[in-house]
Each structure stands twice: as structure tokens, then as C-alpha cells.
Amino acid sequence: MTLGHNSSTHPLLPPTTEDQRFDWLRLLRSRRVGISTFYRLMADHGSAAEALKHLPDIARAAGVDTYQVCPEAVIHAELKAARAAGARLLCLGDGIYPQGLTDLDDPPPMLWAVGDTAVLAKRQVALVGARNASSLGGRMARTLAAGLGEAGFVITSGMARGVDTAAHLAALKTGTIAVLGGGVDVLYPAENTKLAEDIVAQGGARISEQPMGLQPQARHFPARNRIISGLSCAVIVVEAAAKSGSLITARTALDQGREVMAVPGHPFDARASGCNMLLRDGARLVRSADDVIEALAPLAAPQVTTPELPLEPAAPERSLAEIAQLHQKILDRLGPSPVGEDQLIRDLGATSRIVSPALTDLELDGRINRQPGGLISRIG
Image (cartoon, rainbow, N blue to C red):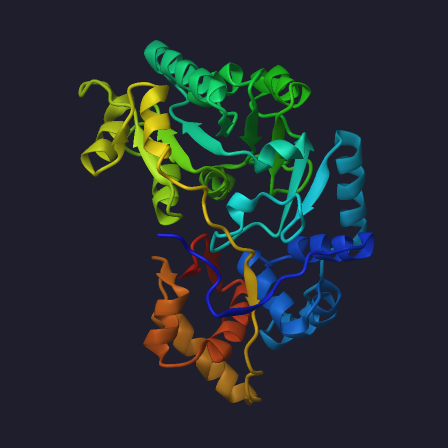
């Protein structure tokens, strides 16, 4: 199943000037403005500059009196760091933004890229797996990456230890992309510093949606994984435990309508349990690069469209009491387990043009959390 922006009738136009790119970045870096809120604010106000003007008032209406947008100095510092790292800003809707991400429900509005951005337009296969890969697992990753590279595929992975590292190394000469959980200038883990430099030197690229200089944290990796799978026409899991980040990538790939494949392993090896579970549940079995090439041959290149912003009639004016009542109804419906925004709207018996601004208020107030895939949960 391929997810997209619902109720979309007007395309998001990319920034065309340095000032507009600055405003996009400043809006996205502002406190409590996640990806969903970014798109909603852009839809409501037409530009990042206008959204920034209204953001304090929106926060104040939600009960946050001390809200301040991201300081301009922070954005100037990020742009300076990007220039020092040779990073380029890719904005949704422009010609160099990866087309594979444009059909996602929550595409990053902006990505930093270091290296040859032309590689992002090529057909990609993701190779992911255990950080503590076995000798056979590393060998399999290298063999698959080399074979697929020779067949014309770019290898995409997360530059982690183990399987990711093996895949990148084997695909250096044919093209590889590292999607990072921290800033694109933060080479993590440290032992992969040379690998990170070689990826760029040999025609590949490193990309990240995170701010320059940001050290990766565990909470960043699920969002990073959706980019790995979104860029790729297929995700191959080489080794993975039953509960691992690689399985999160596989599940995300299924949600995005990507092909999921797995290398089988011995039933007694915990590092193979996740792969064997995927195979049990219908993933395609992979023994060699030929299996992957054969599976992908009938598939046309993914049909992608530029995400569009909703263009809906303005919501009617509501009193403060009505707004507070709606906020409480939403909070009463939510708990710590994520719920789809569409389902919440149906449960409330309201329309998206009424509920969506209220969700923005609650997110800015720190009372709800938006997650990839259009999911919402209550905080506290």
C-alpha cells in the first residue's frame, strides 16, 4: 500500500530564493513544529514567512504564552556548518529532491546532502541488518551489494556497524547512499569515518533530515529508517533479531508499498530470528543477487507524485470555550498508544478542517505527539 497526502488539491511549491529556504528551515526547526505541523502551517498560511509570523499567536491560543520561534542565529549557524561540510539543502518539490520520498505520508520537507546528489535519482535497493553481524552475515551483505551494484542498483543503508557497513563497502565503486540518524556532518560510529568520506569521494552521498551537528539518538532512528525504505524499491534484511531496528525498516517498507525480502538463517541463531519471521509472514526469500534482480524485473519504477498540501475552506470562527471543549474531546480520545489521525477525526464525528488546527494547537502545547505514518498519541 502506498501512502500519500490525503485531501490534496494544491502542490507544495519549493522555495526559490535563499530567504525562502531560510524561512523553511527556521519554521521546521522551531520548537514543537514537526513534519505534520510544518505542512499544516504551510497550508494555512501559504508560506513559511507567514507561518512564522503567526506561530506565536497559535501557540498563545493553545496556552503557551512564552513561545518563541527558532532564533535566526540558530539557522545562520546551521547554514554556516553546512557550507563547511559541503552540504547541500534539498527541498521537497525541487528537481533534486529524491523522487522516491515524494509518495510518503510524511516526506521530510528538507534534507541535507553531502556528495553527488545525482545518485539519489537512480534505482535503489536497501540492505539492512544486525550491527553484531556474523561472519556469514557480513559476507552475504557484501556479496549481495556487489552483485546488485553490478546490475545497476544503488545500495542504500544506514552506515551502522555490521551489515550496513559491509553493504556500503561492497558498493563503493558502483554507488551507495548512507542515510544518517544524526547530522549529515556527524560521522557515526567513529570507526566509519573513513567509510563516510569514501562514500562521497567515490560518487555516493550521505543524507539526513536532522540539523547539522546533531548527535544521533535512539529516537532518531525509526524516522531515519522510513527514509531508507522510502528511497528504495526493495528492502533486504540480511540478519536481524526478533526485535530490531531492521524489522522496523521492513514494516515501514511494507506500509510504503515497497518489496520486502529476507535472507534465511539457522533457527538456533538469534540474529536470524527476525529474517525467519519475515519469511514466515510472506517476505521473499533471498539466496543471491539474482533472486533480487528476478523479483524486481517485473516491477515498473515506482509511480511517484509530488505531495500536495490540502486546500480546504477556512474553518468557521469558534469561541475559546468551543476550542477548549474540542481540545478536551481530543485528549479524552487519545492515550499512549498511537491512533491514526483519520480514525480520530471519524471517532469525533468532525471534519479535518475543524480537527487539524486543534491538533496543531495541542502539539505546540506539548500535549500530543505526532509520529510517522499519520499517527498521534497523548503525552502524559
